[in-house]
Image (tube, rainbow, N blue to C red; front, side, top):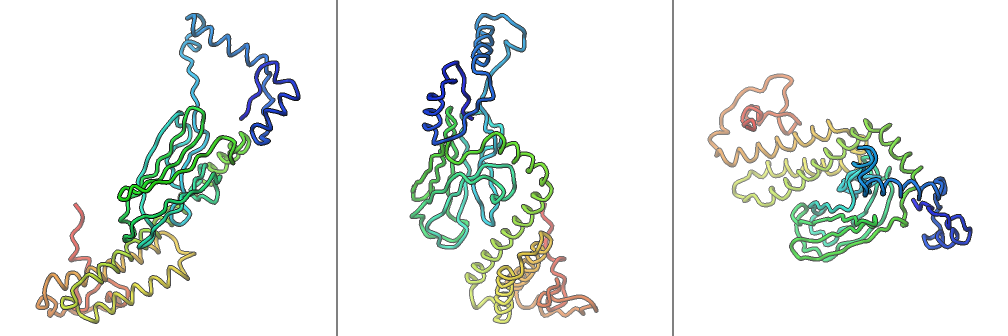
Amino acid sequence: EIVMVGGSTRIPKVQQLIQAFFDGKELCKSINPDEAVAYGAAVQAAIVSGQGSAEVQNMLLLDVAPLSLGIEMAGGMMQTLIERNTTLPTNKSQDFTTYEDHQTFVDIKVYEGERGMVKDNNYLGKFTLKDIPKALRGIPKIKVTFNIDSNGILEVTAEDQQSKQKSEIQITNEKGRLSQVDIERMLAEAEQYKGEDAIGRGDMIAKEELKTFASRTRKALKDIDASKIRERDRELLERKLTELGEWLEKGAFKAGKEEFEAKQKELEAAMAAIMMRINQGPDFWEQQIAVHEGEKTIAQGGFLLECGIDIRDLIEEPQ
């Protein structure tokens, strides 16, 4: 807010010049300019002289971030770095990584707001970090830093920890920031849709975890020595990965957290069966146990190996 304080701010020409200086931003004239000066001077005088009530003596005026600040993640999620009401100045950093294999650049989109998805928040700006060394998704380490100085100017920096490539953007209070009315409206909406946002964010996190697991499974399958894996096992897993990719492309837009987790468990079971066959040796799998009616093998989307063993019985529970 540009608050007009002091008698001279009543002069129309002064108001015009100030508004022009701040690119036409609306001036806040709701405060009596003379009373504001007198009140502030009285409070400061009481603090300096040691007079007045305990409330006055303990009074400390602090600037805070009116809304949370963060960046866009995969799937349009909002990842907050600076929480709402954080005291200014402040500096916060967090490590991120790439979304795709062999990615050489990342776009950093900056938002403010309290909603779980960036589409419901206020867009502030964007910049690109280039020349990232090629690597599989999840390997590069990119440090993103949010710094807000005492004047409320936000500077966002992204640096690749390996190559030391760096890029940044500076966002001032006049550049796309919200008015007090807009901030109050966004806070009310965040509270109103809090439950829906939590569900939507949970669905999106489950989807991204499934994508990450599928990518790692695909790489692990390529790395397995051809002499140690049966061709039909390889074909089975490749088929499951292909079907999963098609489902994510065409049918996953209506899916929820439970469906994504079920797909991941199915893929985990198929991969675990192959790894146990490799580790246990061929003799272990010669045992034949009857498959009961209604149960399904891994190839059919269940948890039974071809020999009839339930894979869940062979997986150790985490400590």
